[in-house]
Amino acid sequence: MSKSKPADDRAESKPKSGMMKMVLGAMILLGLGAGGAYGAFAAGLVGPSGGGDHGPDVPQLVSKGAEDPFAPVEDEAVAMVHGEGGSEYRTAYYSFEEGFTSNLKDSPGLVQLSLAASTRHDGRVIQWLQMHELAIRSAILVELANTMEDDVFTVEGKEDLKQRLTAAINRVLEEEEGFGGVDAVHFRTFLVQ
Image 1 (tube, rainbow, N blue to C red):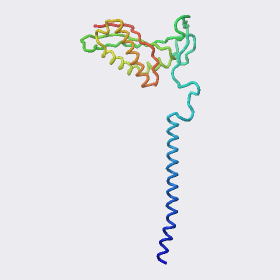
Image 2 (cartoon, helix red, strand yellow):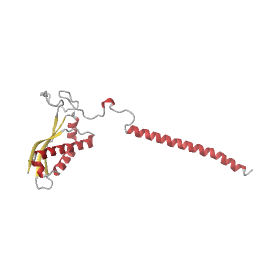
Image 3 (cartoon, rainbow, N blue to C red):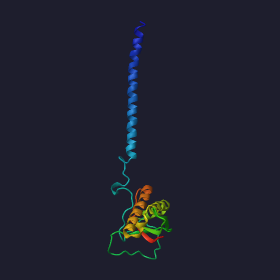
Image 4 (tube, rainbow, N blue to C red):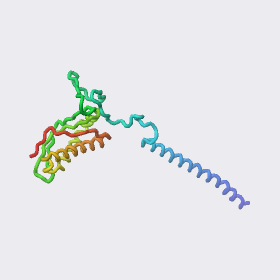
């Protein structure tokens, strides 16, 4: 009889351990499924898209004469009048208050300039230029310091510099806000010493 009792104990413990394995396996699968669902939702693969059919919430192009919901409040005594020709979109400008001075690459020469940036997108781009001006100024100074002296004396070199400065500004805005939006950079003053 003593031999039959341990066999009965083993027979009873096997179903319990099998049931425990099934419960534990189900809990693990449930946890993995919930984690996967959360990850898909957080990545935006499932769930509300936020923008519906309108796409992401990024600055939009503003037609001439159309109202810009993000435009800064201006003196309403002077009405804005747009011409009939040219682009169908209006252009807004942001002028950097302070100028830029930098050494030129591999040269004792200096460049001094003042800049403005233009956008055809809504007023958020202008707001972001103001908000991130310190980081933008730093990126502009890096580009200026990486400019060869010979490049600042030619029209082609200046055009290339304008494109590099536009790209540098947009990189900062994309890092900070997820959207660049600056179409061009314009020289207000340009002096090489």
